[in-house]
Amino acid sequence: MLIRQSRIPSPSLGLGESAFQLLEGRDGVSVRLGPYAHFFDRPGRSVSKWTGAKTTPRQSPHPQPQRSRIMRELALLARLLFGGGDVRINMIAAQNQPIEVLLTAGDGNVVECIDLPRLAREGAPPLLFLQTTYLCSSSNAFFRSVLSDASTASWARAPYVYKTYRQQSLVKPAILCLSGRTKILREHLEPGERRDFALGNIIALTSNVVSVLKPSNRYWVEEFRFPVYRVFDAAEEDSRQISFSSFSRQDRRRMFKEARAAAKTLLESIRAREGFFVCEVMNASDKPAYVYVQLNRSDFYGGSGLLGYAVRIAAMFLRSSSFLTGR
Image (cartoon, rainbow, N blue to C red; front, side, top):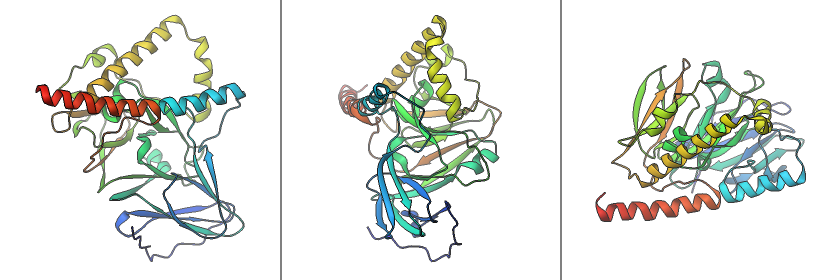
């Protein structure tokens, strides 16, 4: 695929600074790095690099807590089996001189650049987005793999998604680039506003959004009230995970109940065929909410890891059987 670079001049970059610029047609992105700067990219998306660029595979885009070797192995196993665990992607760094890297969005895809501090300044909470839509990010963009709840499973149709976290500074740029088929639209939702989207076309949304399938059973809506929105940064999330052993029996029972509801919702979304079901989205907070949708999605996404392959295979079987039986 031929990528044509935009001729708009870019300002010079200092130590540790980076700049992201969409290419003509939005079919790729140009990342310029100042001396000793770095960014993260999805493996296999780099088209060309200037000499002096160093690529280090399997790096984390967020600070890692101190763990024992056994816990690191368990995190690796969770990533391979379930698509969760620690996020591991490529890190491309400049040495002692500025460099430029060109990345492609993929065949027929386009790129959307999201300025995370700008969203935060507007009052929007962190983003949840599909793992496959991630293209690249700056060094200041922190995100992790999180388990899908019943609301997330209705639009993501995957056990795990990626979630961005609160930035230490809203002044420093933190760019997140997502890729989608043909075109990506950003929809704004006021507090309490509801909207229906075509099932399978949502690729990202802010974490203060609650969604359900229509028409479908809404068992989890009656069982679980709309969650009270609260922002957690990476350190707070670590402390919440570590304190799991201190949860009461009632808290654990509720956690397993929510996991069961998420599994039921995931099964419903697997069986649902595009064109027959829609996803109702509601802003369940007093903050602004944003939904990113892409057009002409063709393949079913069930997550990464071995569990993701199992979900896609189950979707092929359940959808074909539903079509043959007329249900």
